[in-house]
Length: 431
Image (tube, rainbow, N blue to C red; front, side, top):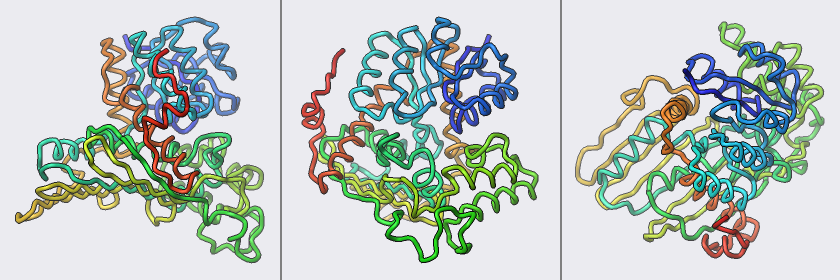
């Protein structure tokens, strides 16, 4: 019998990704859904075959039923993760917890401590460490392919359209209602630095700002909404992006009820998308929104053995993707998601190039990481295994790095000692 799951938060991750995986594979049975958006809730209920008495708009009502499943998928808004996660664990639920763990560091540590002390499985959705190519890169490093690790550079190229969609117009645009960019977007990258190096972060310095996506930079003649704007050649024109790409999906006969279109409206049509652009946040001019998260940030990290790493996040790339550059005493390795290659260059030896397609065949969903993570999660539920590749204990380090980096950025790049940072915030390490 498949393990049973409850999904709280029926958005791009909770239902479009995780829910559809459960439904399509049968590796878990969805028994209840919860979301504040009734239309979205009803749409996924119909798709997954969930009865009306197991649909909820208030997560507290779900837990009034007691323990009715094996696990809860926590995929609601960042600021609500803590309450949902803690209540679920108090009822004995295992968790699939969307990143970031919480937008508050103490809450991250509290969730970790509770899960450890009660022997609960909490998989944090750091999906990049599950990809075939990052696992291969980790093996190369661990096998000493380039000798002793001396430096590592991580780059997060946020495609210009993704930046506009999620971090200027979308749900993650304002840190007052969600998380700082370094936590929301780059906790994946901080996690990769810890995952690949197997070192503990010690000190961090970070600088960045919101430099471009603000009213001072609005082109002459730009209106508050793209549907009314005469500047149709603007690269951030929402009508061109959403309607133009939607039409292309229709022309090719591809599914349209997918991210990012399904974020704008339930069961997208061209008419519904246009209505959303007229009235919703995704139709606003990128220079006239209420965003405050950075559009670029650069961080320098030192680890416990003296290793130095960097993280660059930039919201102005033509194509999104990550790059990782590893420097060792016997050579270097360069991983590039855009070209889908890993280039190994040992000193005084010929270089070799490994294409991602030599490592796997399915790169859908975060380079294939989504499915591998979910396979592991469901297998762990079925077998009772509590050790997973991205458990809560491993994930907290990356969050400490993100919170410390944001503290540094807000203080003009001040060097932050991670341990001192925790102590200065009166973080309680034990519950």
